[in-house]
Amino acid sequence: MSSRLYPIYQQGNPQLRIFLPNFFMKLVKPSDPQPPNVVQFIVPVQMTRYDIKNYLEKIYSVPVENIVTHVRMGKFERNFKGYIIKKDDYKVAYVTLPRTEKFVFPDLFPENKQKEADKELEKIDTLKAEWDASIKRHKHRQGVPTWFGL
Amino acid sequence: MTTDKYFKILPNSAFIHTSGSHKALSEFFDNEKNWGESEVKVGRAWKLDELRIKSNEDLHKLWYVLLKEKNMLLTMEHAAQEENRLFPNPERIDKVEESMKNLEDVVKERNRAYWLLETGETGERPSSLIEDELGREVHKMFDEHPVPMDHESEDTISKWQDVRNFQRLMKEKEFLEKRRALRRVRSHVCKLLRRFPDVDMEKLQQQYPEVDVQALRKRKDSRGHHDKNLS
Image (cartoon, rainbow over all chains, first blue to last red; front, side, top):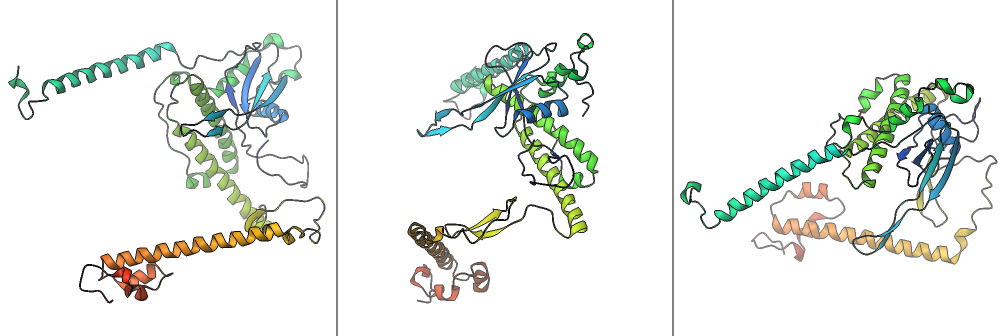
C-alpha cells in the first residue's frame, strides 16, 4: 500500500508490512449519476483495489462493500505554443458502501459567499471608475491644485 | 485506527447505525467555514529538528494526520478545478508534502542508526555507479533476485556496432561540451582582465583554476582602452 520497494522476503509474518503509506486518494464529484451509497475516488495508478479497501477501512474507518476500478487515459491538449501535451493517466475507483449508508457530495462553493465576493469586486470596479474619471479631469492640469478647476 | 465498528462483523445491526462512514468521509473535505473562501490561513511546515525530538509513536500518528490533510487538500483542489474556481492558498499542499518528506527523513535516520548499531550495515537499498549496456556511468539501485544472477552471460551487447557508434558519438559530444565550457570561461576571464587591468591575479586564478590567467593577460583579447596592456 505504498509506492516504495519492499524486500522479496523478510523474517517473520506477515510478509508485507507497510509503515507510512504514501498513496493519496481524492474524493471527487461523481461524473455520472450513481446510487447513494457509491463514492467516486481518484487514486494513483499503482493502487490496487485491495489497497483501496485497506486504506479506507484502516485509515478512515469507512466500511467498504465493493470496489470497481478503471484506469483512465489522461487528456491530450494543445498548449498555447501549438504542440500537443498529454496529461497523466489516472485511476478511478467506485467504492460501494453498505446498503444502509448514504453519501451526498457537498456543495463546496456556497452561493452566498460567492455573492459577497462579487459585491467586493463591484466596489473595486466603482472605485476604479472614479479614479479614471478624476485622472481624465486633471490630465491637462498637472501640478495645479484640485480645487482650482471647481 | 479503530476497525471494531466494522459493519460486516455485526450483520444484524443495521438499525443502530449512526451514519459513521459519512462522518469519516467528511474528513476528505475542508472545514465547512472554509468552503468558498478566498483565503485560508495556516501555519508553516514541520521542521526536521522539531520532528527529531518526537517519539516513534508520535511520528506514526503525525504521518496519518498529514496524509489525511493532503488527501483533503487534493480533494478540494480538484473540486475547485472542476468548478473553474481558484483554490485558496495552494501552498498548503507544498507545506504538507515538505512535512511528510521531513518526517520520512527522520524515520530513515533512525532506521539507519539502528541498523548500523545492530548489524554494521545501513539497511538501505544498496546502489552504486555502474557502467550500463551503452557504456555510460549511471547510478543504479540494486534489485533483489530470488536466484543469483549469472554475470557471464550478459556482456554480449557491448560488442554490437551500434553501441560502438553510439559511444563514439557520445564521446564527441562530451568533448565538444567540455571545449565550449572552457572557451566560455576563458573569454569571460579575458573580459574581466580587459575591464579591470588592476585585478588581483592570484585571486582570479583561484576562482578560475581551469585557465592560466597570466597567459591570458598577454592575449589580444585582454587589451582594453588603457595604458596597462602587456601586448
